[in-house]
Image 1 (cartoon, rainbow, N blue to C red):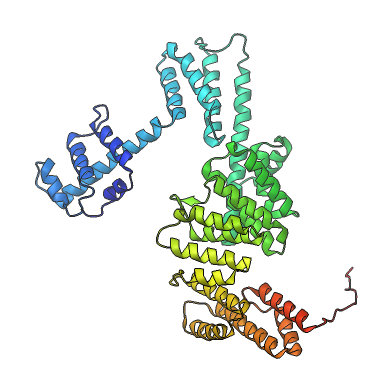
Image 2 (image 1 turned 90 degrees about the vertical axis):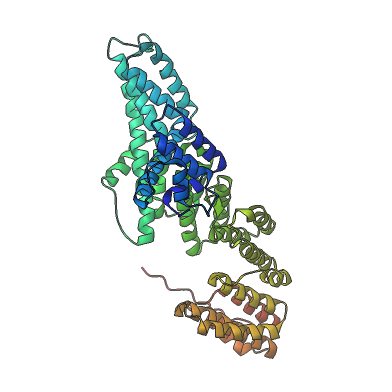
Length: 492
């Protein structure tokens, strides 16, 4: 069968969903034309028959002569039926949606005997609602509106005696404020995220007034109060403390946020934490690790039930930075099957090598890198770096020299690598060669020039490791560094 949209949609369904769709097609209640229903059932039955043509399926069910034009019209009708099925599934799988619809239906049709029960059912569904999202607040607002409308006429159904009807308006007002402030500030925080990526300064309307109103009126610990803090996080003078406060809030009040909303907040906190780390605040590494663990606990990093390789790598890096090596290795093994099978083995081997490199188990680094496929440029470059470090630490100088030479040839020939990136890797290679020579010759003058180069604005990956090796060699050779005793000048 040709790869039409309908076929792609049906193949994305689970076996259980396909069985439900068949049941839906056979239901006499729904308005599905017999010809469409039968044709779609045949397509479902033949989904795995890739060699069977649509014309063959057509001739089993439809009397009219086959043509591509007629087929396209029939497939369009089938797709509309599938969309109706999806809508029905979504509706009946949501007790809240069904309860709300029943209430509106009995009120609109003046079925007084069912109104009391319908009101109670919707109240119960809202009380049991797991996430206090926009959907929750908007439905709560609707409920208070229905209460007020019922209490304003002769049909005072299910309204408690002596209950002031203005109470429903006041409750509706409070809910409306909660919805408006939360959603307005949520959208503003999302726009801030987009601005930071696109380098724009776009702004929502009336944001100064909204923020000012929220600061004056919202209670501490409420959702709007939280979003004010999140919205202003990029202006923080103590990002570490503020990120920890916001992280603590979403962890304790998970119920306030939908899955997508929670993920968006988590990524905002992570991005801000990484920005703070890049500014030199290494104390935030523990917070970054904690944010990643929260995301894992809530499945916030899964896309189509898979972990992306970049996220997988960043979690391992985060654990290594605070020396949680056993946790990192356990994470790799427990989550390896969440990686796409196309790059699973390479990602697992590469990240294990990274952990072993940080643990100082350099023989295991070399062993793991044997399983890395080098088709991906990032894996290729970083694997070469880890091999160079491992050869140096193990004293394999011949292997080190050979790899540096081949690495430089690779950098020279690989056009996909930018010149600035090539330069940074070449700086690493040449500096490492100089350290080896200074070590062999016990050359203190050479060592001093290497340090000066590293302390300059020279760009190179693993620069801190190179400096660490210089410091180790300085101690070994008894190099005493000169320290400027003059106090720095202070400007007025």
